[in-house]
Amino acid sequence: MKNRNLTFTTKLMAGEVLSLIGIILLALMLGMILSSQVFAIAGVREISMEDTMFEGERLFINKVAYRANQPERGDVVVFLKGREVNGFFERCLISLEDMAGAIGNNQRDNRLVKRVIGLPGETIEIKDGKVYINGSELNEPYVRNTTFPDMLDGEYLIPEDQYFMMGDNRIWSSDSRRFGPVSIKSIEGKASFIVWPPSKWTTLSADYQNDK
Image (cartoon, rainbow, N blue to C red; front, side, top):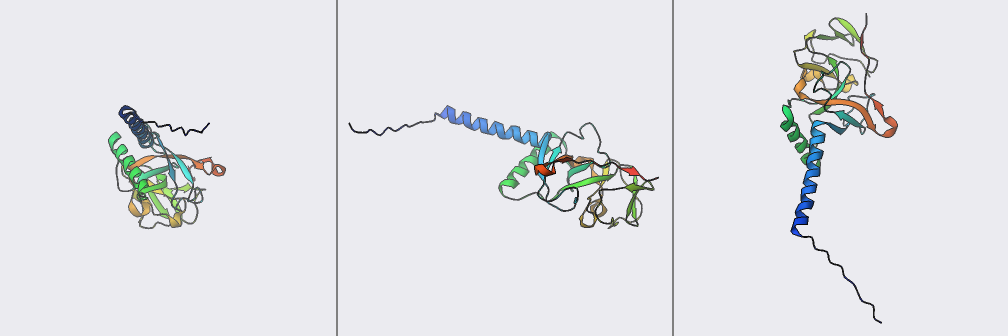
């Protein structure tokens, strides 16, 4: 008895192909909405926040943190330097731009991770390597290196709806000392904790106190 070769041929009907495409598009859309509106995982690409975080680590970004609340001193935030984000559709557009950039290996260079130091309406001054808020020295146990004023000259009044950001690694951080305060509309979300590597999992917070 001769062996017979059995060949199985499966043909996808046009409706099945369209359904598959629809499922893929729906999954991409849901992923885009979640990453633009709710949360995202972002990689650290700079040394300006050492020793709090290091290049290669990944952060959980809470994008709803500031929908009802305002940033607080000590928050580590992610923002777009020089770009304000207005509403649902622009957040979606930015997410689509990020997806396209990832495909082309072209990462956005104006997305920064910094710490909130000064709040709207406060005066900030840097002298003798220390930061002063409304005339009182700020206790900053997380800071690496000395804080230089850079382009900040004397006391500076932070405008309404603007936040003064600085990196923890003060010598190697380009921040609000150089490019000015950041609008609340430029802040994408709060960096809540480090998620990778597992050995570095930790929440990102700081207890700020004005020395008396």
